[in-house]
Length: 352
Image (tube, rainbow, N blue to C red; front, side, top):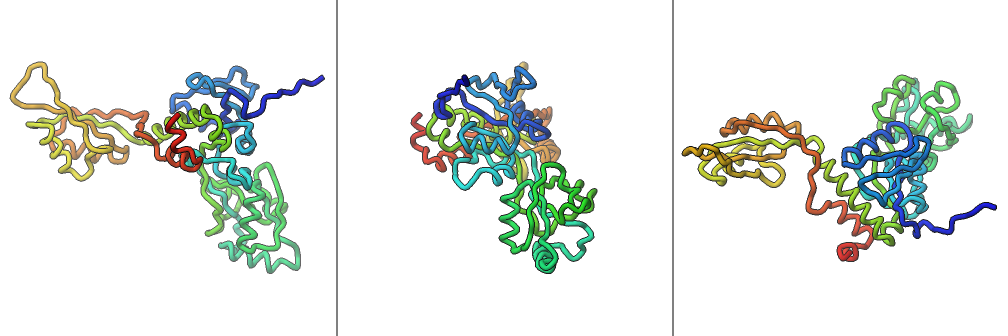
């Protein structure tokens, strides 16, 4: 006789994090976690469960991207990482799915309307609506999309009627050439695949831009303090890593009579200063001389690196070192405060 577990989702001691299980989204998500000092370890490559040794109370569950949203929405998972496109399609009408971080800066794409290139008179959504109306006596325009709810809402809002909405799981770009659909609504990254299949995006046919996001189940976040604490640690790591991305620490030595004098030299240059300002400290020489030396630390973006070095040289900087930055932690991430406000937990969470 089958045995059924009597443990409900909100009685679980383990915190479940749902991650994408296939393709580039999985690889980039694992890369993000690794860059944040979190290594996901699978004990068996055929299993869908894994652990993160740095967060022992966390269970990692690998799921299809659509199921990541569904699991978080239904409370089978507490936290998840997935693209906004799947969130928009599958989160449902309630506010159960809470976005904790809306810009993890990978898996960038857009949901867009694309029509055959030979439709030379169709460049906008209004043109598409006119075409649908003109062909009303023949048949509805056929549109194929993996995003049924979003596609229907967009077409209805823009009066593209009549239409027949078809579903497909594979590559949609071939459908118009095969004659199984008239146009598509699908994710686009570079647009190369569209062009290779003789399709073009409508000028105003972008439904939205998408990228990877960090989400959580509202009930778990508000009723289970351990879930909220795990969300905070992950959020802190994501924010610190993303803030440090493309930034470098520049260290240089400079002569001066005082730290204040050196600071004025730094501020005399238009692009020097760092996050709040330069860190200036005395250099202790093994053989003291009459000339005082100070060390300057400045955080700069990669784009500003070469101009920064030039400006440091102009004010007497020497021995310039450039170091990569892994994390930049803030006193308290703004997204954390925003999350607490959305959950109505500001005072309660601070007291924990």
